[in-house]
Amino acid sequence: MRLSLGLPVDRVDSPDEFQTGAAVMEIAAAADAAGFDAVFVTDHPLPESEWLAAGGHQAMDPFVALAFAAAGSRRVRLHTNLAVLPYRNAYIAAKSVASLDRLSGGRVLLGVGAGYLRAEFEALGADFERRNDVADATIRKMLEIWSGEPVQIGAHRFQALPRPLQRPHPPIWGGGNSQRAIRRAVELCDGWMPFPNPAGAAERVRTPALLDLEELARRIGFAREHAARVGRKAPLDVVFSPLMRRYYGMPGFSSAELFDQIGRQSELGVTWMTIILERTGRAAVPTRAQFLERIEGFGAEVIRKLPKAAR
Image (cartoon, rainbow, N blue to C red):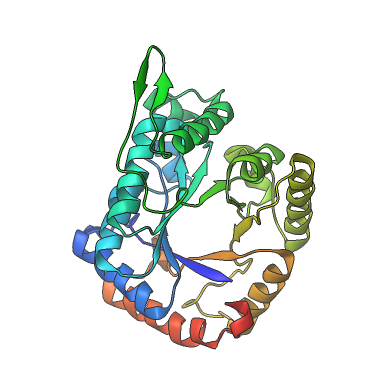
């Protein structure tokens, strides 16, 4: 099991603490030192006010934020969790990923998805109804242009260099809980990123509920069955989150419960776990210094105590 830490770049309530270049670099360096395998950011270029009031969050441009994380660290991977593909022209997205991968020494983990916020799609001029088809087409176009060979687009041929440093390309993880999302991950990607989703939010985020490990196991089973149907031989990374009410640093947090989650999810086939060490609102860590202490503590109390088999 490998661990990806969420960067608190959504903290518009404390921009001087969390939203400067120096802050992102320092936090990424701390994650590196603590033993995390990656750091991640989300993607909401223009969230609507109603969604924010209902618990949504702001986000920095994922590729810019991760570029600063890369500059402040040496080892951790740079994880988009996740980039909404229909928001961007496929070739502009491919150029951003290739540039970040090249400049970071080959550290990009490209989590992608079709998106779900209709209002944000409309504000950006993106096609909400065709978002799944656009996401599939975007992945194919990125893979094609990353080959380094000229591609035919209309009446002309085009070439985009430099290529990503990783070969044949950075790992792509497809996000979402639906069978359509799982099929995309199996057919076009290197991994699948489901996420915990209560039944009450299923309609709002337009992906099925996923409440427990039994349901996760069923969906992993579907992914394996589909892989067999389409003849996929390569292993599929599965990226999930701890199903716990209390995260590290909160009263009542149990490291034993987290170790149990890591062990049980690993047995199901989960290979990566996303970790959040703070929340906005009343539960937010007020200062960067305290957040850095939390990262260091998690490294000492959790990461370094994981059985070698779990790492």
